[in-house]
Length: 504
Image 1 (tube, rainbow, N blue to C red):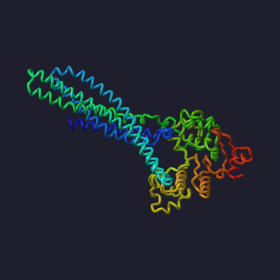
Image 2 (tube, rainbow, N blue to C red):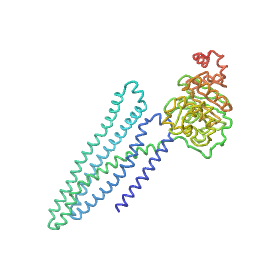
Image 3 (cartoon, rainbow, N blue to C red):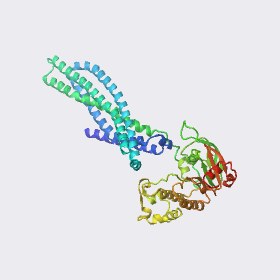
Image 4 (spheres, helix red, strand yellow):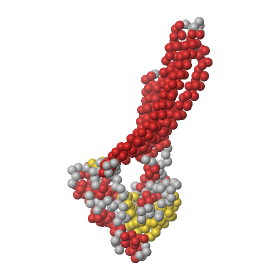
């Protein structure tokens, strides 16, 4: 029976823990980007480390011990009551006293556990930030300050942890009192009723009463620890039930596999904000981009350039209006169907730990010949050929063993392989020199000649030969025309930007 009980608890807790971790992992990977903008990374790490550890190891052990203690206390009370039936009269008042003490302690310890869990997250966040910025910290000789900050955050966590130890001792004193009351009354009733009881029964009653103090103490402690540690389940469950992005796929709204065939993009009174409660970042965008047009997007800092690209990928959802690509509203289809049909070369190049081949073609859809061709067009072929492992060269975390420019060219090669009808460049050449920038722009002009290209321009000279220029100002379209037309108007915003860049 003991073996069966232990096996059931082990299997049950394993299944529960696996389901909770899996549910939280799937949900966190599907959370909207606004969640990560407002939630410190340390808080997410805390849920996946300490809270999952509590669900994995602490709760099953506490549950087993609680069940064992509960059965021992019930057995002890039954034995004493059968030996000296008058003892039953004291069970109710002692039970009430025990219940009051436990309720008072549990409510306090649970809140202290919440405080302790919350104050642990800043430790993880600060440590992660310190590791990431270690070179900068050393450069400014600020090691001591960051060490002190880390110790300060640990101290704050201990300030929340210490009261839980104090409250634990408070509980122990009161439980000892209840246990001693049981011993006292069991012994008293045994002595008073000695004429009717055999010495063996008296000994049995008193010996069980002597053991109940420790058992009762452990039972209450396990009850409290169970309730306190169940906070970890509460915290994991909170992330599991967090609102996620729109559905990945909507079968009844699935677009044609060849969509988009033309790459016609239309904004109809489009408005969006980064999250609820914030001001609009795009305010009533109305424009139509024809198939194969090359559109340069410019504007001052905060004009809404990057927000426009985020809106196309539905990283941020619309507050009003809609965007359509080839007459299909992107808000009505699944996110995977949308994002797999658009290509972006981001401002911050993304490289994962693994081989160059995996980073170029993560789904193994292309041959080595295709990969080398893409690398050649991205002006990265000579570099990769010079590597000992070639395409199997291992990239470290975040591509740290590649320069920023090389990472950017790797993203360009990845885009060349996808070759979708719509290409978005978010200041993609900001990290490369002028000569490489010209080579990249040449590649884009030839390889994406039939594609619709939207470019957020870092250097105005790269978009001077584009079809049209979209000038944004405070989230609205200020100007939208051919670059030559805009330059002829000396009062236009684009003319002023070109003048500042020394192009006119």
